[in-house]
Image 1 (cartoon, rainbow, N blue to C red):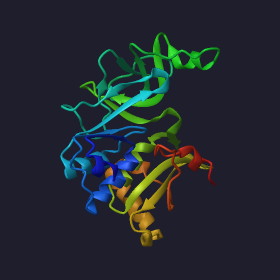
Image 2 (image 1 turned 120 degrees about the vertical axis):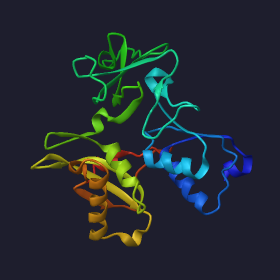
Image 3 (image 1 turned 180 degrees about the horizontal axis):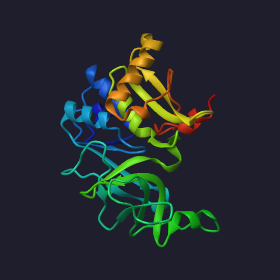
Length: 261
């Protein structure tokens, strides 16, 4: 309503809000004044980007920053943006992907994101400084890959990686697979303790049609994920919910889901 009333040209919000805006467009909302959409708060799932492009033809820019860095340091550009990609370092910043020992990993390997540039972290009288800064590089707490062209791709927050039967599974990848199914309005994926596997992938799903809440839909979504990404990553536990817990800015509170039994 605000965009329609004031003819806003740029919107900054979370992916969850963009999904709501896409639904509103189906009901006649006029967002044609927008020349760009900037996604923030959490990673932008590929299906949301693809649907936005199909319906508006306007760029949707994903990027990443951190409170400790004061600034976005990796971003897509108006003339260079793509699905499921966080882009390249902003001018003045450098980024690399490292292992737990601080060594750079081969291209395409998931590791810890390290960044340095004109801004950096300085915790005062706080032990976190020792973990956040390593040899002048800021360790953001995110897992990424860097492809052969130098583009960076978000995998998960380091503490959101799901280790199941020895496999490392990135929750956002499973979420993107689920979101590509028309029955899924929103979803969040977390690790759930399991006696046999250590953890299993647990999906909390808001359906576009609540009447479809059934075991048949659970299997349908599980089979869909198996067909889109590696089959071992499918959610073994699917829970249908009316809404997901979020912050005031629309960021999904996955820690609240992990605390549920």
